[in-house]
Amino acid sequence: MEIPERLIDILEKANYVAVLTGAGVSAESGIKTFRDPDGLWAKFNPMELASIDGFMSNPQRVWEWYQYRREVVNKAQPNAGHYALVEFEKLFPQFTLITQNVDRLHQRAGSTNVIELHGNIIDNHCFNCKEPYYGETDLPEGQIPRCPKCGGLIRPSVVWFGEMLPPDAIQQAEEAAMDCDVFFSIGTSAEVYPAASLPYIAKRSGAVLVEVNPNPTSLSSFADFKISTTSAVGLPKIVEMLKKRKGLL
Image (cartoon, rainbow, N blue to C red; front, side, top):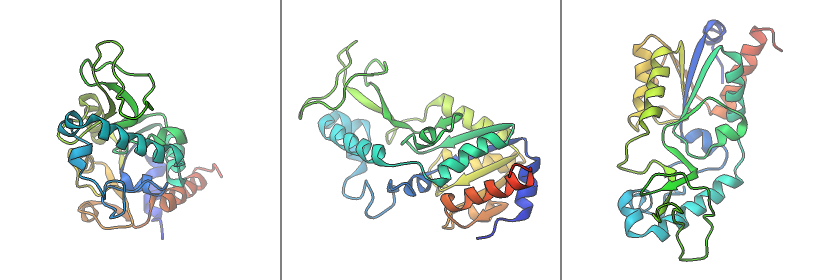
């Protein structure tokens, strides 16, 4: 796997770098992607577990599912790709990390300027009054956490199928795509909209577009640079080359 010197030339001069990450980044920490045949979703109908209708028809089943997912996430550790993005944040005057992932591994690695397009499965809030919920969720079997303010059902603060993305998050992400000098699309299939539109917005706005993904995607032919490897392999190499160029190693 070769990192083009021309890409390092561009990054050395870049003022603002924005990054979009997808499930492939988390997969390297052992969190299966949506499309994996043996992944977290494989044995279930996602619409029954990650939609308002599914939650209202069987909130206990949905809660059991998310408790299981949290156990998987809590056991996982950030990988070399996550840590390389922490270094990215230090190497550029302006840096924005946009993620479709809901596991908060970027924050655990040390990234601070993170936009969560799909929310996360760590936080919770009331389905009715929308108030954040900080109480216990690991309740005895058959019990569902309820809001101490209004008595409504508590739900994970993740975006479900059929729900709109948080308006502030998508607005900030689009602004980052329009304003950045270089835009990285990392570990994402570039098929789920509106997140998939961000690389195209960046390219149309004049940014250099870089894809880091071991597999070809619909974005590959559109990218200025295609790094055909995983984020845990490719990103540390980019960081190392850039640090050498800047005299930091």
